[in-house]
Image 1 (cartoon, rainbow, N blue to C red):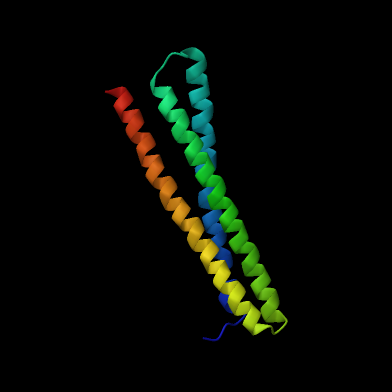
Image 2: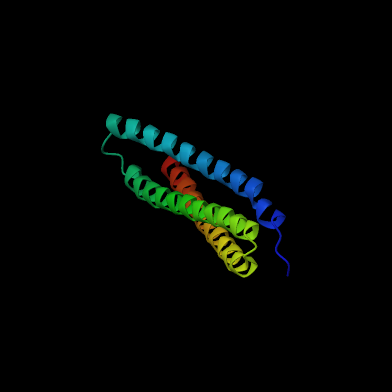
Length: 129
């Protein structure tokens, strides 16, 4: 396989869109936390809040991990392009592989967060029953 400068360059729009999605997840979660905080202040005895709070903590942790892994992938992509610029193709191949692995890890954590998000919605539905 031949690795050219355009190969890692193709990751820039993909990773940027991924960060946009991650940021939207974070912002919606922050709004939910603020809403739950207001709900808790109005009625601190609600039992359903405990499960929601635990769920939110797990989701916030996953979102942080998704962002960190994505950032590392993005940094490795830039390093890879620099290595290709310096004609260090063997090192660039290794760094590109690492870039792909970190991007894959970020997507796996994203899938886990989506699963937890579904559980959070289920908690809310059960609270309304």
